[in-house]
Image 1: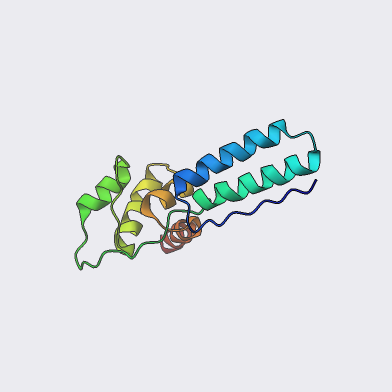
Image 2: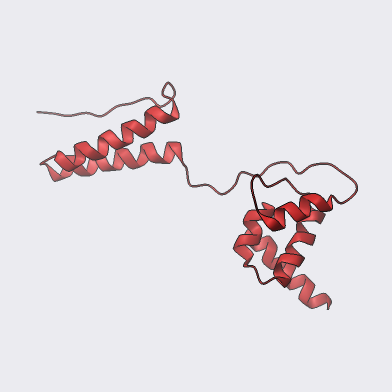
Length: 130
């Protein structure tokens, strides 16, 4: 007996893909043939990646404003609710303050929506300028 697996993701909604992944995992547990159980699990992981590709926060276009919005900087530092988008200047100010508060580069990067390496570079530049 030959088995084939074929699905097109373009038509399915995300919730349907999640359900499909769960169904495939259950089928893999019940499958006696190890090869097919592995194939079902691999396909389930592929489905899960379609739902949550594991990417970092998507880069958004920063707002265009000439003056610094200190309320937005404060909201990012507090980190409650929806975090506003910051300009690079605002992100750097928030980064300096959160660094002084002892926060990690990863946490700062997540809140300001920049790369970890950018926060590390800003910290290095600040140390060199002192």
